[in-house]
Image (cartoon, rainbow, N blue to C red):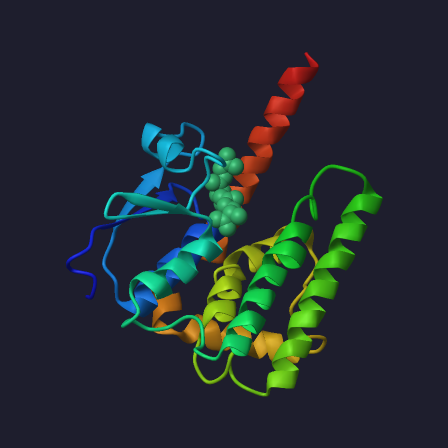
Amino acid sequence: MAGGDHELKLLGSTNPSPFVTRVELALALKGLSYDLVAIDLNNKSDLLLASNPVHHKVPVLIHDGKPISESRIILEYLDDAFPSTYPLLPSDPHHRAVARFWAAYIDDKYVASWGSVYVGKMEEERAERMRQMVAAVEALEGLLKEGKKPFFSGEIVRLVDVTLGALIPRTKANEVLSGTIVIDDVRTPQLAAWVERFCELDVARKVLPSVDEVVEYIKMRLAQRATAADASKK
Ligand SMILES: N[C@@H](CCC(=O)N[C@@H](CS)C(=O)NCC(=O)O)C(=O)O
């Protein structure tokens, strides 16, 4: 593996985290070796608090003692810091800008619609979140259709694929828990085929958690929240 002269430490989580998965996918694609430090997010370590003092969230990549937070920023950092490894961003400035736009779209529109699609809150709010999720998925379907390529930026996986690919297990878990399929062969055939293609990649097989694991984790979190809510009423 590359990166031998550098020390890379990835602060991850004891539970599946799609944001940590993004960085693991990128490191695997780039062939960079690293130490994974699995943090219990219910009992955050001093290392995490000191490394990400603003958000206290994982992932944090620590490169030769210097921390970098936020998954999409870490992906771009890896391209900058290890320019001779597998590139996530294309070289053309316009293509780079377009890739960054869609990577941000995935977080701003798709991930943002996840909260409360299957729990709590009002029925109307859940329905609205689901509408937002379907709209985001349809926009991504349109992008693939327009590109007419196996992956978002062409023949091989790059920034947008890694950004979205890491979300596949959580997407499927959301479908299981909400009872609503958002990516299917009929409504979003390009995206459904992209999901299959992405999951067949060696790096995806190596890094993506199973859907069952994610479903169990979400159920556990929901149960913890329900217990906390009950306790606060007493
Ligand atoms: N925008 C951040 C999101 C990171 C994030 O939400 N991480 C979660 C784990 S999936 C976390 O650390 N949660 C702990 C907390 O919110 O206290 C990124 O892309 O890295």
